[in-house]
Every structure is written in structure tokens, then in C-alpha cells.
Image (cartoon, rainbow, N blue to C red; front, side, top):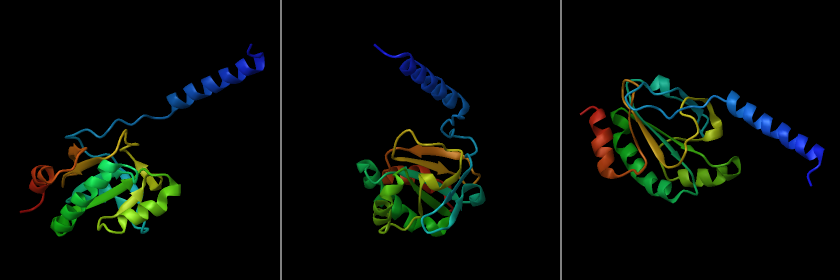
Length: 168
């Protein structure tokens, strides 16, 4: 039999959880065709990535994790594309959703890659919200609009969806 104290504690916990859920603004995923939400994050090297300041450039925002096999498969493709087109108006950020304790793993993975990286808890302004899954890569055009998103990066998708946005 549950004690009155146990029931009261459970009720208080339940009400607190409901209040927290209702008071926390939920963010919908960015909408394709709409202006990209704000995103400001401190990269691992200390630089600030501010999506709003990158108008005029095509930007890829990739959410990933060290434990995510599909993410690790996508990263070399993204890196090769970034290396090839970064001098042609392409910017990119990889945002790891790993825990703070996994930062050494994040650094090890990224040591081989050219594009900048940050961790989710270093995001100071986040209109994208926490991703519901990884990998996910958002494509932002030169006008700052979300053009598309990829959950599986393939070379043909990069050529089809991103390359036409870059100057020829």
C-alpha cells in the first residue's frame, strides 16, 4: 500500500513535470522554403558560428553523434564536398549531440575533417531546437532560406540539392 506521503510526492512531481513541459517553448523543425531560424554556437576552436551573418553563402548545418554509424558514414562525404566548394561560397558546421563527457571522442573524429564543429550544449541561440534524430543536414541558401534537408548524405544529393545553389 502506498503512503500518503508517497502519493503527495508523486502528485507534486507529476504537476511539476506538466508545468515544465507547458512552460518550455517547443520548437518545430525548420520549415523548407522559410527563412532559417537563428543559430549561434561556439565552435570547438573558440570561433563563433552565427548563421544570420552568413547571408550570401550556402550553409550546411549537420547534426551528428560519435556513436551514430550513419553519421560517421556521411561525414567523409560532407568533408569532401566542403573541401571542394568552401572557396565557392559554401560554409558548414557540424553540431555533435554527444554528451560533454564524450568531447574527446568528438575531437578525435573531427581531427580528420576540415569543416568546423561544435557541441549541442555550446549553442547559445537555437531556433533549430534539439534534433529528433541524427544524422540530419539542413541546406540553407544564400538568401538565408531553408532549401532542403538530408537524412542520408549521398554524393548525388549534394550535387542535386547543394551544387546548384553555389556560383557556377
